[in-house]
Image (tube, rainbow, N blue to C red):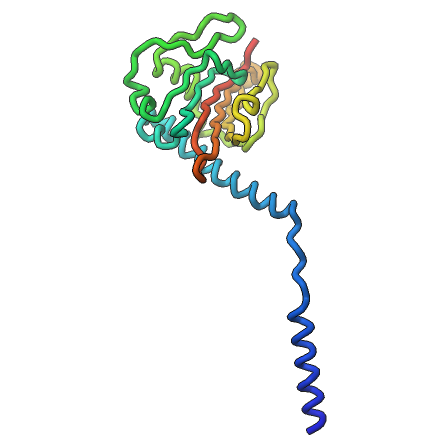
Length: 204
């Protein structure tokens, strides 16, 4: 009987000691990493959704992803000229491909001439000018290839995230004919919306 009581009290003591062991606090770096991965996953998914709408030339579908307050800015090159860039609000984007009006979108690299094109003409020359949907080089918040132009995407869009679809150049042109499309997103009311469509390519 005494032996059973001793065993009983030992089990109680062991149970109490286990219950009082404190859990090791999660490292703040691990918490931040989990948060960043979550944001990356959301933004990357939005990036592919937007790219599909762009490839389909579906202005109505594309407008669903555009920031309701800021709209979406179009830039023909990695150096964003804010004062010359065109910005479309969601309602305007629905009619993007129906608009035949000539607009100024920026300046031609190396020449300085104004880029005056209709929305569809601009789209064909400075948005989806190669098959970005087929590339395997897709990055999050990073530039795949450094260029001789100023990349001011983070200055123009602080606290934003972007997905880059990069199409490498051909051997024929020693890789100089590469193309890049960056889709920039900003958080609003708990969701990430499109605020920038930044095309890029080699510039003299």
